[in-house]
Image (cartoon, rainbow, N blue to C red; front, top):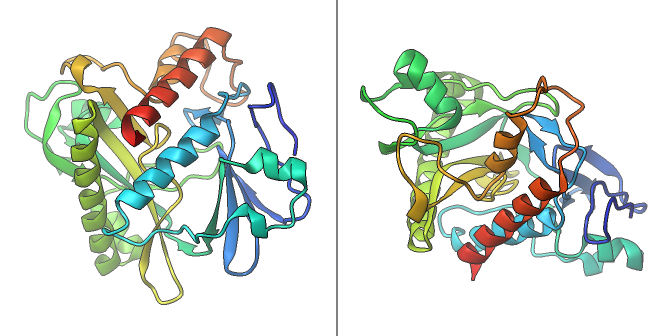
Length: 299
């Protein structure tokens, strides 16, 4: 197991006994057998679809903790990819097992859908930019006169393509999504995504957190059943705002990597690889934000 920085920081993993299937922006994925994969959440951070060279200590452990919490809370809505298997059944060295502990899951192998399911409850980010130009987000017309960060009349489903590492996701209309995966499956993905968001948003608000928007990913099992995969409702896949500091008209403070994006916007950097090194204070504050939102949600 190779680590970068302190022993508590993992930038990239190398598991000698398992074939590497993919190294994504944040996750390293290994084959366990024909039915299962090992997903390791590293401390890498990507912003503007570029992997930063500076890891955020314990970020992968926090993301795994938060995602597993939500998988458990929401499993009555839809099955998820967790297999229930542990690291104990894998041929790992003691060093490898220690490095994977707390940041890895063994999941069922599924056929991933080629779209990302994004639900927006508030008008921010690329949705805000679209609205300023067109009065709509992903083809969904919104009321006139909305301000940045306004709560939408009701949450909206705005799918996107699933980009390769180093490339950008592209927002698509629901009609385009129907053409890509079929009308019936698209309707199911939209319905489930909105229910997941509504349940999670209500839960989080009781703990002082607004979920402004979030991203879900789905796969199909061998029988064609829809299954929730990847990560869910983490600070990497969602915008989390402190409810007591929320005010429409401005970009609210956040518990997620928006803090890093805001810092990067101050630099003379073209948003292409390689990304700039992050200063220690940005790393420390980002790690603290991830820890705080995890504690608020899961304790």
